[in-house]
Amino acid sequence: MAILGTLLKKGIRIREMLEQEYTSPFDLQKKELKELLITASATEFGKYYNFPEILNGFRRGDKDFYKRFKSNVPIHAYNKMYNDWWKLAQKGIKNVCWPGRVKYFALSSGTSEAASKYIPVTKDMTKAIQKTSVRQILTLSKYDLQPEAFEAGILMLGGSTHLNHRGSFFEGDLSGIQAARLPFWFQHFYKPGKKIAKNRNWDVKLDQIARNANEWDIGIIVGVPAWIQILIEKILKYHRVKNIHEIWPNLMVYVHGGVSFDPYRKGFEKLLGRPIYYIETYLASEGFIAFQAYPNKRSMRLVLNNGIFYEFVPFEDKNFDANGEIRPEAESLMIDEVEEGKEYALLLSTCAGAWRYLIGDVIKFTSLEEAEIVITGRTKHFLSLCGEHLSVDNMNKAIELVANDLNIAIQEFTVAGIPYDSLFAHHWFVGTDDPVDAAVIKEKLDHHLKVLNDDYAVERSAALKEIFVDVLPVKTFYSWMESKGKVGGQNKFPRVMKKTQLEEWKTFLSARSNGKRS
Image (tube, rainbow, N blue to C red; front, side):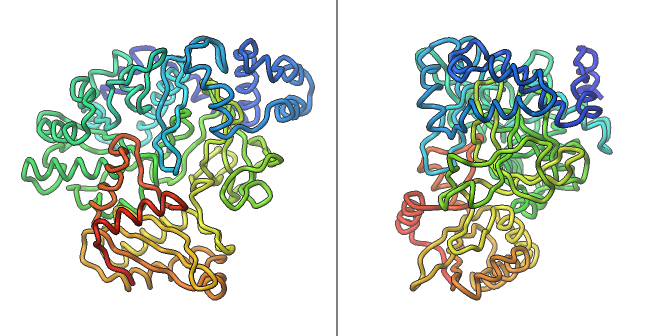
């Protein structure tokens, strides 16, 4: 097992894994916050919000430290964090929110209406992400994998490692920043290699990978589902084979993240010669938050002792307005105060200088003992025009069920809430290249959503009067992303469209004038 063996030979420590196994989530997180505050206490942010005063709270036996933390430091959405602090770090100023100078900023994937966000990536965060990546690789020992999987290469399909220089810092996708700084021992396993990874032209990069695919022995592939699927389709076409296992017979694992894999599963499996393991990760521009720790479980374990302190805001009307904006008086909880089955928006404080930062994701705990979660959506990517409370998780599951019912592959979709007569409707745009009647999709989609979501079922007989379905070629979705300059890497198609973004999408579709409505 070359990868696992190399990790152990290089003396990679698994102490952190054992520590999380045998320590309570609360104790781990209390220690993590303390270390973050101590490290950043002399920064401008730490002095402004009086970190030493918060640290005095750790001497007491109760949760005084957390009360002081919440009292001293306000919740920061992106605009506040960037305008008040991160913008200074971009100018080359040292010790703003974290010790030292920030040399790298990750561009967010940009599924929201806003332009790309700039997220700081410090040396400490880079090391933390690498350590968590090692922990995830070590969990592969729990899987029933042949030795060849560990001796083969790892194909990581991400952004260009050729970063843009912006005076005092470099910018690019987080995947590109991390790939450019891989530890030397990992480079033996890494594909497509430094030369191809530097290419900024996404289409050319995919073509280069497709041409070279038969020269590599790949056991693990890593990347966003949509782009991995496009790549595999290119490889099959270029080499004139029926499935990817004819090229990579030792392919056994696909590590995915960024979006739910459920809508892609059926189409993806058509490209394989045999079943493989799917492993979900939660790697955001802000840090490596969680990963799937066990085979055949659709949940991920939070990483509680590696540079991130978490807070959980109940995703309820009292904490968020109708647009998904967090209210100033929003309630936040520590990990020992949450409940299984409830939805929470995440706040992060990190070793990259994010403090009580609203990342925008909504999660749900499936196991408090194991600190295991699933992502259910985004604070702004949900529909509740009239109380239907439709989450992205509901949407993904319903689309997967429809695809299974009709034996078709639905690779992309998005939905918008619209006025209809004097009430409301949902307008779905479904991407598939298989022949299908939009009216049939509409009927089945509506049925499954009623089963999955009681609030939706109630509102379908009240204020949510209609749903519309447009069936579009899959290429339409990717062409729109290309028109927005969001091709490849960590870019994902938005699952919910609102306001300006919806108008731009409709204008784009009108220009192409295809698709059928039911």
